[in-house]
Image 1 (cartoon, rainbow, N blue to C red):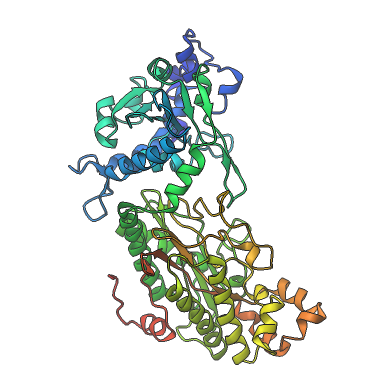
Image 2 (cartoon, helix red, strand yellow):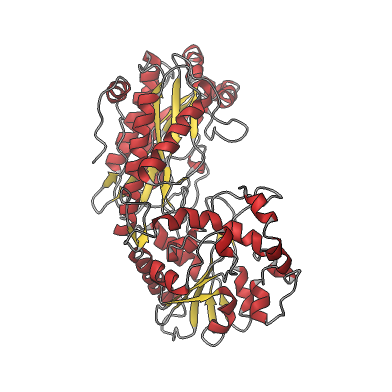
Length: 556
């Protein structure tokens, strides 16, 4: 039975409506229309059936393992068990930093951190929605999979409060068992659980100051705004300065528990990449590789979500940095002699992996393909070897550029002196993107450009860096050098006489059908250096051997 048909059979629920959060807290009478005041429309459903269908995806993804005795997140006995202690530790870290930054020396009594979880989207005007994925900041502190929840933390005591929607009895008919407050308390290991319609009554006498998120995500340029539920506590003072940098800095430095989750999702994604590598052959569609990857990470690792839209780009498509979108949907038939660039990563418990492999569709690299690939691999290897606390990330970008330029000089694709190429930013024509980005709960994780950190560079290539920070222990960052023969950028270079003199154009144009090469690992900065979480074939010999049927060690 489709959800739409289910909705028509729940007309009594629709007629009665769902009593919205603001009305319940304000003491409004129940009404058939269940309208909210204007400012509440952004987050409160207008009828119960819409809310119930939004909850369906969350319950399907998280409640399947309820029969398992483990308390935490798990997708079955063959997957990683993630204890809620991870989020309890995160809450304590955030509380400690926030407490130190709220008028140092002052009494934190009455100060509460306030976060609101996400709300599921819908497919345009229908009641069909994608599988819900929690808002990242809320997940970071609470690990809660269900939507339309609110979380609060007492800054003085560290006591955690979770507020969940109250569901009518009919929910059990269409969506499944209605879970008790005790269930949520045990599942998420919080101190108190209440219904969202009790939000005001619970906190009104406790919270005199609310710490909320406000700021710019420097990676996306989008704004993080205070939660709408803030309006339900109009008596409280609002601090929208302290929390945002405190949480961002915590997210930058991964705990041991977080690194365990990220190592797991890297193992699953690495193994899936190897299976895709083995299956790849001429005549396949690009999307068949995407499909196989998604099957592998879900069936073998419990990863219902991928961390981003998969890029499966063959031939000249591999010179398009973010190929795979709706306008270019991984739908080319791969040909003998093509390279295919596969940028795919799974997500587990909202933690991302981001891995790129480039391989020859036929199973053997051509001379030109090998030249470019090994130049990028040298850059990749050199950066990981040089990474350590105290190293500036822009310096790693420049190091990668030098190795790629040197390979192109040695291969007869460029001419001139290396230092002249560096000075004229020729490398940015072949690698217009930044070397890598912070990785965590978001694929492009937060904290790249804190207010007191290094400013964004302005030079070509360097201006695309998603962070300019100095590396610190506990950071997880992608290392993804690339070399692309992008026709648009090459045409611009050819039209510039100062830049064009460095190119051997006959060789350059011979490489255009190759598209491009990118090699990407997920790397942890350790106390003395770095460690890659990714384990896939990297050398030409390893790739060709695996594509010919050789085994590959998945552990490591």
